[in-house]
Image (cartoon, rainbow, N blue to C red; front, side, top):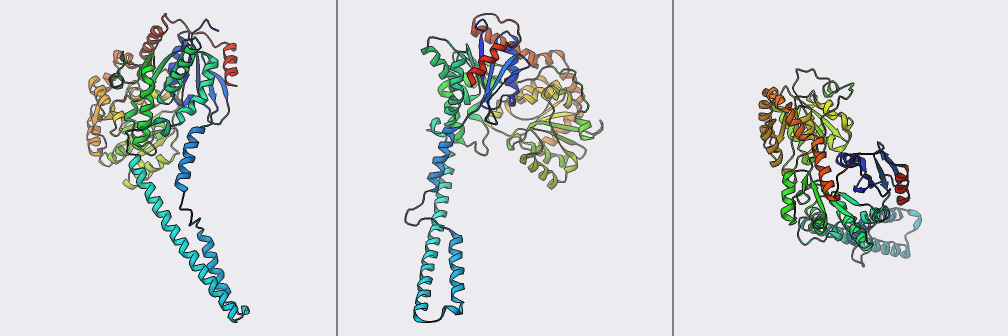
Length: 509
């Protein structure tokens, strides 16, 4: 098994959730390398199988003990109260009050001096308990307000952040992947995204101590300091992962990323001795996929009805609400939202409510996704593809996969004015650009695009353009990088051997 160079690729989630990971693994396997993909099991059970007989896929069980310990410490700190007051149980105080009232109204208890004194003492005890309960209630309010104020300050503080304290799950990934990598003893560890770059670099360091060499390839799927903030993605959380990346990225032998803008930032900010290789996250020129339906048949719309389509994840920062708001100014236009992973999620319910509030429900269609290889064929009958991302540093540098899915489906593009997307669309002349978050400008640019859609479709059909953006061209860049890294020309792929699968099973068990 040592006659083939072995590449282990690391993913911080389920392997099948990331099409880029699978496409790159296929490229390396077809180049004659032995490829093993390691991801995290979603159900806690280890599994080992193959990817079309070309690469081995292993999902590893993992307990995020360091992350849970941090959350537990956080809960204990916030549950602490002043020791003299003790716990406040409102139901107990209410029960005491009802009991006293019942005893006072009971004629069988008599009215002697002893009975009255006992009742008065119980009243005093109840008043004391009530006073204690009020004190605890105000104490709880004070602590809650204090922690809220503290969180408001700390979560907005991106400096002086220790990533081991804020994102200790980076060490959980080490516990999940590290021992398996050591047992597999690969030639290259390909770390996908910032969560696992530390795992790869530490594995290479252990190999050097043991007299072996492991090359590290870091695949930066996004510009980490510019990740959009929402929910738990606070400035402090983002800064922690950015610091984690900063500590390990210079130790990588080669860096790959998804856009020229991100490549330039990484080179400058980390003082790299070479510019990261850009491998765009594109699909290939679409196959002829047998389809029983497409986006128009799924929505029940005839060809003459103007149809915009959005395909992808549903989050606030994707800006889909901008498009729905713009429909008020586009009375003939429909919008199809191909929601990944499903239209039956809370974020889609928010968009449904918005459409209802605006009176455009009949013109907004939420659709289940299709398999990845069928996406471009499925979307091709729409009139334009939209990418309405809101402004964020990472979005300014992004060239998302859907940009190329739309292009290869010959859909004119209507994108928000993020720098890299604006450069792509205007440079190739394949669509229109609108001001991010502005429904009125979106509507105005949509009207222009729909008038010029045939012109844009002609440009999208140019063979040189399609070859330039297709995955086959990006795959050649990745092959070249690995040939340089390993110091020899790559070969042709062969099917995964049974002993290779067995070796991974043994390493995982």
